[in-house]
Structure formats: C-alpha cells, structure tokens
Length: 503
Image (tube, rainbow, N blue to C red; front, side):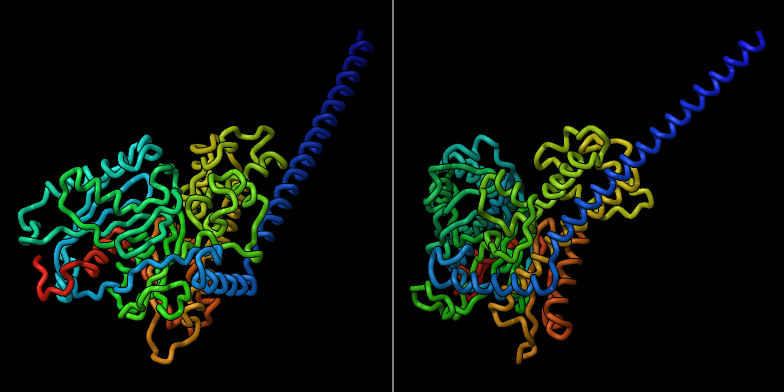
C-alpha cells in the first residue's frame, strides 16, 4: 500500500514539476511575445518620428519654397498652388472709425451676426454684441437662395431687437461686413464669386456666383435695409482686427479647424493686378496657404492615407499637416497601425479605433498636456473615446510621445510658413526704421493647444535668430474675423469721409 502511495506521490511530483516547467515556459513565451510586440511598437514609433523630422535646414528650405510660390501666385492666376487672392482691401482700419456697423461671419456649420459700436481714436470699440445660429444640415446641400434666406432671416431678427440708441441716423443705410470663409475670387471690395465649397457644404448653384449679390437679394426679400460694404475671409478679418488696435500688424494667420494666412503687399509687387494702383499703395493678399505643397514637406504614409480618403484628395496638403481638423486623425492612424501590427492595445484591434476622425484634436491636446504621474487623462480619453480600458502606463507614455511628434511637426511647419511670408515681405531681417512687424494669430488650435503654440513661437525665434526675433511679435487676435469684418465695413463705408459718424 505504502509503495503504491509512494508511486502516486512521485507521479504527482513529476506532473507538478512538468506543470511548473510548462507554466514557466508559457511565461517565458509570453514575455518573448510581449518583448517582440514592444520592439515592433518602438520600431514603428521611431520610424514615424524620423519621417516627421523638421530640422532647421528643412524648415528654411520650406520657407524659401513658400516665398517662391507666393511670387508665382502674384504673377498670374493659376501660376502657383497658392491662389494669392487679391482682397481689394487697400484701406485697413486706422482707429478713427466711428458709428455702428454689422458683421456676418459664415465660417462653417455655425454663423454669427455682430453689431459693433466704434467710438473713434478715443473710444475704440464702445460696445459689441452678437447672436449665433447653426445652419441646418439640409441647407448645406440645398439651394443658395434657401441658405441666404435663412441667414437673412436671422440677421433681420437681430436688427429688430436693436435698442433705441442703435437706430441709424436719417438717410443712412446700415452697413455690413461679410466674412465668408470659403475660397472666393473677389472682383471688388464688396463682390466676389465662389470658387468652391469646403467644410461639408455642397450647394452647386452657388459655385461661380457672386455671394454678395446672393446675400443682398435675400436681405431685400426679408425687408432688411442693409448694404454689404466689405466681403472678407476670416484671415483678412483677423488682419483688420489686429491692425485696429496695433498699427504694426502686417500679417494674419489662422490656425483652427483649417489654416490660412494673409498679409499686406506692395501694390506694385502684384503683376496680375491690372486696375489703377490704390492710393495707399498697398493691397491685402489672401494667400490660401493651406494648399501649399513642396517636395520638402515631411509627408508620411499616414498623411498619404488621410489625403486619399479625404473629400479633397491632392488639395490642401499643408493644411492637412498643420491644422486642427487633421492632427487627431493622423494620431489615430498611427495608433491603428500599432494596434494592427504590434497588438499595441492587446490581441484585438479596438473597433472604435477604425473610425476616421473619432479622435479629435482637442482630445489629443488634452492627452498631450497630461502631467499626472499615472497619465490618468490619457487613460480616460482612451477608455471614453476608443473604449480601450486598463491601458498600462507604458502604453500611455507612447501615446503622449505620438501626440508630441504630430503636434511638433505641425507647429514647426506652420512656423516655416510664417518665415516664408516674412521673407517675401523683406521682414525676415532687421528693418532700418527699427519698427516691429506684428503677426495677428487666431483660431482654436493656436488659442487652446499650448504645446503647439509654444512650439510654433519657439521655432520661429529659432529660424529668425535672436536679434531679428526681437523685431517680430505675435499677438493673439481673439475673434478677429467677426469684429474685423465690421471694422472693414467701417473703413470702406459710403460715409467714411463724413466728419462725424453718429454713434
């Protein structure tokens, strides 16, 4: 009996040892598998970082390429990827403007109507108020008449609610600045034909038509006595808003959902301008710089994939690398590859990670700015948006590293674009008169993504060198596009020459 029990014990021990060896082997295999996965993760991240590289030399090449394209775009229509649109804004606000002016700001799925009371040199902006409305989706692909009627109705309601003090003087028409943030070929300060829709709009009968004429007819149908005094895009509005408070503002850059730049050019430096030279000798140019393209741009497979699947393949390449609509999507594409090729989030690829644009740039910014020791913001964003629970600290750190790579590339490229504009203006070196050049910046990306903003400003200083950098300043021109449109209505008012504009 004892002998039999001994055999059982030995057998059990052998089985136990074998099991232990098996478990140990399994652990070793698991570790090897994990370390293999992790090596693959790091290889993909390293490759991405290298392809996104923006050394100073490359950025200076890009700035030179931007300057060359600017010259070409000023010579002839279609001569460059940059449209270099003539804005017909040759009088920027001086600060002397007085009176009550309106603005209509249509930049996407929302629009705003504003009323701005100007008090001249002493008073500045005395009073401002606005109302906001969203555009119903069906109007974004209906008819231009339906869209403009809807906008005119909201504007009529806004005017009807005016207080007594905002009634216009006798025999004086209300005047409006119309910010229309879509590509337009302007034919005067207050007329321009739509080149194409962007941002999800597709109203076919409006393409090629004068958008001011469309709005004016709608205002007449709704019984609103109002003259459109200026048609501007948001970048030019930002330039005007910046100039109103600082006479040294000469460039404006929007870094938001999309990106664009405008600047003050010498009228004589625009070969394609065939009209009489403006009295000011200057003309504001709307660059439409989002469409910039160069062989020096550090494009990756993720950028190519995003571009091919976008609504406008082959267009707006620069914008797709630097603006708020796309940064989060680039990050998602890298994370998806990590999940598919290196099981970054476990054996299964998280289904939500396959949805384009599910990861927005504000969420990317929140993860990038996470300073908690356990990166809990990163963990909660991955869980809430992508339904990826229980991520390790190691995984979260890689996510932050990727945010940094994407944002740094975008910010440094944006800085190289600014340098290109300064070069074209001859402002990339110290000026003889010792005056500063001020760049008005606006847009949610610039305003809210601190790491991006600081990287852009530091890069510009690096590219200019300390001495020249001291002569260049960046100012946040908050809500420039709406107020700027009202200011441009004032500086292009029919009554601008009157000695006293009533308040």
